[in-house]
Each structure stands twice: as structure tokens, then as C-alpha cells.
Image (cartoon, rainbow, N blue to C red; front, side, top):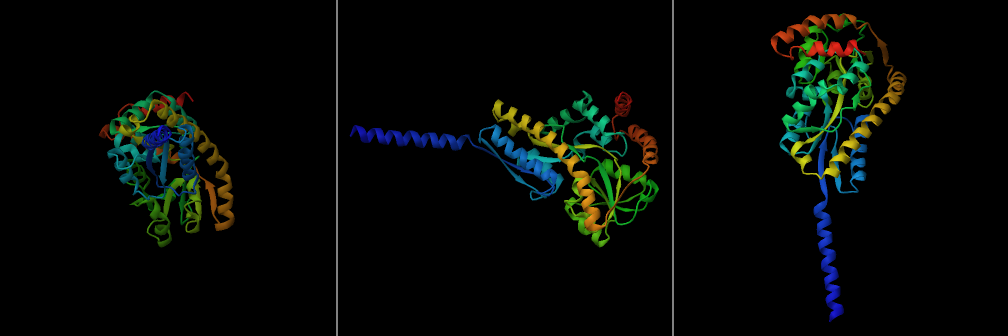
Length: 332
């Protein structure tokens, strides 16, 4: 009888431990808009794997790529209200929470990648991004996922100068700074979801789109538009964000694991984009007859200066912030 009681007790203890183990598991839902096999998609999957590893399996992140959870704006809103836990998106997508991000999203405000890196490490970054995001209900986990490593315009007709962009049927995201900046260049802006761009260029609804070079090949753009010109109109990061309240419920060790994983994958992401950039260009040239060139961007830089000052006077971007950025740039 005593042996039977001990066996029953062991079973009960095992059951309790099993329930406790299940209860301790955290499953998070994360989304993004890029293809799963793109360098961004791979980076996000690697982040999810690394978080699981660093939390000893206590946290699992289920990743849904290619707008499976909705368009970018919808996913951001869904993450804020807690219907999904995480969203990975380019910093311009979050500019509605920060007038400072609107400034950085304008064409040719930041003259180089080196200056952009200084901005993200300067105390001004807290003012521009970190504080507004927390206020909106989102916690950014890292700011080193530089997207690019640079930006290009892909078009169905050759572009040899800034002047050639005038009149182009040009795809933009629903982002105010893009609308204002490209309007100044003279493009005919068409608001369109990222995943609809390929078909739109094939059908002639749009003639051009700008993109990080790292996403041109995964999106297969050069199958329908073979002209690529380097534009460097702005610099950005992919932001790994998590619902602020959801993040607060994680243990301190788990939060540290998230931050560490985000920083580690960010470094990998930048290096991998640089490795793949030239490789992708050569492949697109070979497979699709793509043509790649650089053009003089100085006319665009000069064009934007009075427009930025006008936007300051209108209150579209914070007054004085542009001068702070120029000061940082001057010290580079």
C-alpha cells in the first residue's frame, strides 16, 4: 500500500511539474512584410531562433512573413493593441509617432551611412525614436539593423539624372515624408502595398520604386524593370519592436535575452547585406539583363534644402532638428 501511495505521489508531482512547465512557456506572434527567403526574412527567423536558445526554450517566437498578418500599418497597430506581439519594420513606417523620423525620412537629409550611424548613437536618437516609440506602446529592441546597405530606384525606363525622375509613376508607401519629398522631385506618386509592386510595374500602373538593394532580388523586380540606379535618398533601420506591456511581463533575464539577440542579429544582418549586395547585382545582370548605375545626387540634395526649411516653418518637422543633424554631419 505504501509503495502504491508513493507511486501515485510521484505521478502527481510529475503532473504538477509538467503543468508548471507548460505554464512557463511563452509563445509570441511576430510579423513583417518581407519575403521569408530575403536577408530580412532570414535575419528575423535567426532572431527568433536565438531568443529561444538564449531563454533555454522558454520563449518561442512564431514568425509570419510577407504580410501574412496584414499590411505594415495594420501590423503596427495590431502590435500596439496587443493582437500580435512583435513587428519588424523599417524606421520610416513609424514616423507617425515621431516628427523627428519624418525629417530623417526626407530625401538626402542624411548625407552618408557614416553620419546616420552617428545619429543613431547620439543622444538625439532617444528624442527622435526611442521615447516616441515607448509612448506609442512599442519597445524597440535594437537600432543597428541597418537596412540596405544602400537604397536604389528600380524602373522600367532608364534614369540618368534626378531630372529624369520627373513625371515618373512612382510607388510610395503611405508615409507623409515620402509623399512630400518625392513630390518635390516631381514624381507622380502612387500609394501601393509593397507586395503589389511587382504586378503594378509589370502592368504599367507604376514605372519605378525605391528599395534597399538587398530586397530587389528577392522581390524579383528586375524581371519586370531592368534599370537600377543608386539613390541613397535616406538611411534607415529595420526596427525589431515588441508590444511594451507584453515585454514588461517577461522576466528580467528574458528581456536581457531579447536585447542581446537583437543586437547580435543586427550585426549579422548588416554584414550579410554587404556580402550579398554585389552578388545580387551580378546575378540580376546575368539573369534579367539588369543595368546598374550611379548618378549625381547633388541636385537632389540642393533641391531639398529650402523644402526642409519650409517644412520646419509649417511644423511638419521639428524646428532645429535639421541643424542638429547638420552639426553631427559636420563632425563626421
